[in-house]
Amino acid sequence: MSAPATFVFDFDSTLVRLETLEALADLALAGAPQAEAIRAEISRLTDAAMAGEVEFGEALRRRLALLPLTRDHVEALAGRIVDDLTPSVARNAAFFRANADRIVIVSGGFREIIAPAAARLGVPSDRIFANELVYDDEGRVTGVDARNPLSAAGGKARALEHLSLAGPVIMIGDGWTDAEVRQAGVADRFYAFTEVVRRPAVIAAADAEAASMDELLHAEGLAGRWSYPRSRMRILLLENVHPAAVERLEAEGYAVDTVSGALDEDALIARIRGVHVLGVRSKTRVTARVLAAADRLLAIGAFCIGVNQIDLEAAADRGVAVFNAPYSNTRSVVELAVGLTIALLRGVADKSAAMHRGTWNKSAAGARELRGKTLGIVGYGAIGSQLSVLAEALGMRVIFHDLTERLALGNARRAPSLAALLAEADVVSLHVDGRAANGGLIGAAELAAMKPHALLLNLSRGHVVDVEALAAALRAGRLAGAAVDVFPEEPATNADPFESPLRGLPNVILTPHIGGSTEEAQEAIGHFAAERLLAYLNRGDTNFCVNLPNVQLSEVAGAHRLLHIHRNQPGVLADLNRAMAEAGLNILGQHLKTDEGTGYVIVDVDRDYDPAALDALKAVAGTLRFRTLY
Ligand SMILES: NC(=O)c1ccc[n+]([C@@H]2O[C@H](COP(=O)([O-])OP(=O)(O)OC[C@H]3O[C@@H](n4cnc5c(N)ncnc54)[C@H](O)[C@@H]3O)[C@@H](O)[C@H]2O)c1
Image (tube, rainbow, N blue to C red; front, top):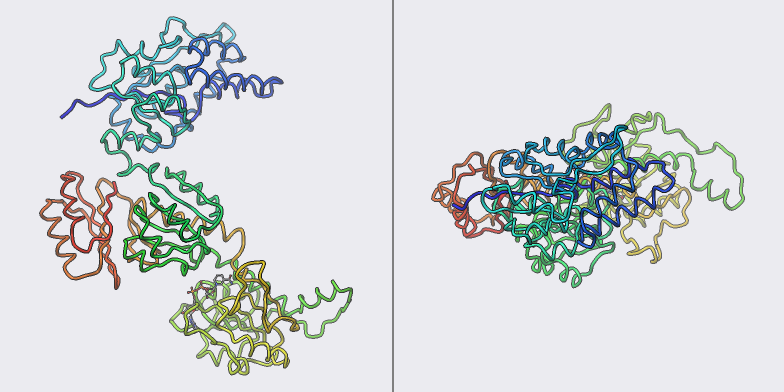
């Protein structure tokens, strides 16, 4: 075995996501009249020094001279520096602690600032090489100790060359002074660290680029926090997915690309290579052809409710998990249903329209309170049952009808049948799902069975109501009004005209399928779908997956997790078990879930195994996807 390496880390913009001098400048210049100009000059000098354009010691002296810096400022930054650890450093803190005797921090920055961050990472102070600030009697910073090699050009190489560092020496940093260590022959390899800043000149001088600690550890063959560096996992989000999702996925270390519009099939095929996760909304069609071109795809996030736009079977057949965001807009639909009910009971829409035409028509005729009325909810699922709670809180009596057994909430009562519900309800609100059998669920006969002057709301699916029959019932005065948000045929875009027999009828409120369209719902969808994707990427959890067996999993702890998605065909499990036995894997936990087409096996194994043994698992006939997590 080769000797273990020594890892030499730069500090500013590597272990922490800031430049010390710039952060000190912010503190020292707060409220100063020339602050902007001085800050700009400090940044310019930092960049010039990092890019190798101005000699380091010269740049340091000039920057310090620009600042009215005191001990208080230095102490303030030191006191909060641990909050600024670079994200991938913070999440790999265990690596630093476990390897503290193989880690050195070398920096042109200041020991007082570095020490608390190093302590947090478990790196002892005698492994920090940095400048020492010099103060005058009043506590003002006058410069740095000039005898320290780090105060001058080439200082890092000089500070390191007299140390007898074990094994190959690996330098990691973002700046030119780090590249110089390699050029001086003091380091055997140099990684340009680019999680915080990317400097092309430094990358060009490096042996390799590391966009995170995970990448570095992966490249060095060391087990980082993750089996595969997240910054190399590409997530492509189309159609203006909510920024909350982008933020969340990036915060977990993944590389996220966004496209504002939808892509057509060919454009998506051109973009999908190398993408690990695709995020779409309702306009992008993910066809079998797109999936065939997706060489790396693990999962698709539908940042919406429906998944008709995705070929779910073709995705399952390639072991690609599809997630959506059901329930994220439930509350939005419910609130609109409540509002529409009140508006219908009071004739608000027609009265408002008349006012806009200049007609004042103050009258109580036909206007009714919600309180004490009976609401009949057809379809007591997520939306129906939530509406039940709100309606009851407003004083309505609630009855419901559902095909399956549902828990009646509050004082709601199950109606013996749809017919019984229609006969009893003052307001009928439809919340059934979109299955084909629900086409024409409410037709002429059902409308005739409703109480005279009852109200009908449809915020479920357009085909559920026969709109011709509804228009006839409204024209005949059989019903007192209706609110309809969904239609059998809806315009494809906002530019297309809307045609319907319901147009122009009294006390009929028409809305353009906006039941679930609120800013809160969009944000909730962003959060929900992003969390589902993260659960799958990070743990293998398929809870809420719409096309693979659902398995809820905990974090991987102290084990390696093998994820095997396969065709549900005879012999796969036997072959898999045989391959695991032959590989001598020590199994700590196992899950299996199958549906008609696909099987999903999750095995947590002892970390002590020969990685080559995994090839046999991948080779089992019927394997669709194999992944390891740790
Ligand atoms: N207007 C909008 O913008 C908007 C937004 C979100 C959801 N929706 C629609 O609202 C509807 C309900 O959504 P959800 O999240 O509550 O769905 P859900 O699946 O949670 O609930 C649907 C319920 O309807 C029941 N059901 C199905 N057919 C039935 C029938 N013929 N008779 C009685 N009960 C029946 C099911 O058993 C289930 O309990 C869906 O059609 C959905 O597409 C519309």
